[in-house]
Length: 176
Image (tube, rainbow, N blue to C red):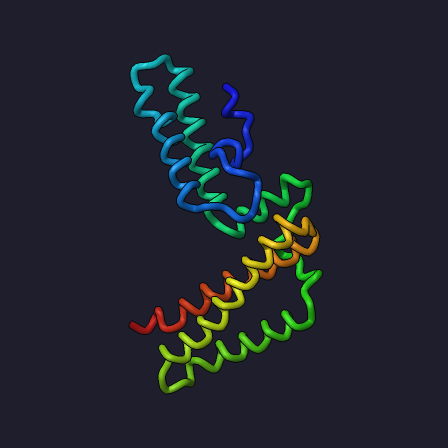
């Protein structure tokens, strides 16, 4: 079946771009899911049931990938022949490295703050603003400028920011 040969964007009838209409993506996913859902094929031959299961799995994988900015950027760059190594720190500008150190110091100091929640919120807001800035920059780099190497560096930075946000959220979780 032709659907098996499609990439995530083709499968969900989306343009291959970083900027994506999430509501339209959701509609496309729901439409495809309704068409290939294995429950629709329970009375069909085993081969058709297996194919429906494969297609439903592919639809889910495509939807999960395209709705997440990091996964979508990594996937787009892979389609263009570039692999993003999440462990590489090459290409990080000194300013970003300094920001990381400052955030780490702030994170360590939060436990000593009299108002833990307020301190955590201040840091979270700062890091979320950086995440939003990186996402906007990725749209420019991938969709408009097509600077894939620089985009890969920004994706790695975004990965760090997302992991750091998780660490911020974990503060105080074991206290309550």
